[in-house]
Image: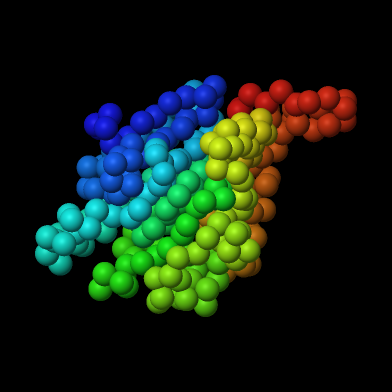
Amino acid sequence: MSAKQIAVRHDDAIAVVSLARPESRNVLSRDLVLGLLSAFTSLKDDGRVKGIVVTGEGKSFCAGADISEMARMSPAEASSFAELGQRLMFAVERVGKPVVAAVNGQAFGGGLELALACDFIVAAESAVFAAPEVLLGIMPGFGGTQRLPRLIGKSRAKEMIFTGERINAAKAHSIGLANRVVADDRLLAETISLVKNICNRGLLSLRVAKEVIDAGAGIDLATACLMERDAFALCFSTDDQKEGMRAFMEKREPRFTGR
C-alpha cells in the first residue's frame, strides 16, 4: 500500500483512514481501491481499533473513480474493476466495527458509494454528493444502485442516478443521505468525537446490532425479527451485558471490556 494513496492514523482507539490523493481530488484508481481494501482487511483484525472514520485529504472526500483509467477499459476489465470495488465496499461494511464517513467536499460516483458502505455519513457544510455515472455513459458499479435506494428510497435514488445532479449537504441531510451536517473546520474533530462516544458502548452488542441491521435489510421482516431475537438472547451470555445492567442499577458508568 503506497503511503501516497492511503493514510491511516490512530486517535486513541479510533482509526482515521484518509484517501491521500488530494491533487486528484482523491479519485479511486485501482491502486487506491487496493490500498483501501488492504487497510480495512488489517483494521478488521486489529484488536486495538474500536471504530473507524473515513475521510479525504484536501478539499474532496472522493470525486469518484479514475476516469482516465476507466476510459481505457474493455468490458471484461470493467467487470473486474467493479468486482474489486464491490469487494472493497463489502470489506468496509463487514469490518465488524462502527465506520463513519466524514465527507468533506465532493463525494461523487465511487466516492458516494464508499460513503454509503459506511454505517452513516457526517457531512461538512461544503459537502456535495452526486451519482454522475450516466453523464459518462455508464452506471454505478460499486454497489450504488443497491445501497442508495436502501438508504433514501427507490424513487429518490432513481432521481439521483438518472439525472446525475449534485445535491448539497443540507439536501443530503433532508433526504436521509447524511445523518449530520457540521462546520467544515469541525468535521473531523466532531466525527472522531462521535465515534469515540459510540465506542464507549458495549462493543460486542454494537457489533451484533450492526450485523443484524445489515443482514436484516435484505430479508423479510419476520425472518429478520427471528434473527434479532436470537442475537438479543446471545448478548445475555456476555460479560458486557452483566456489567451494563449492573452499572445501570448501581447508577454509575459501565466499564465494558468487549467480552
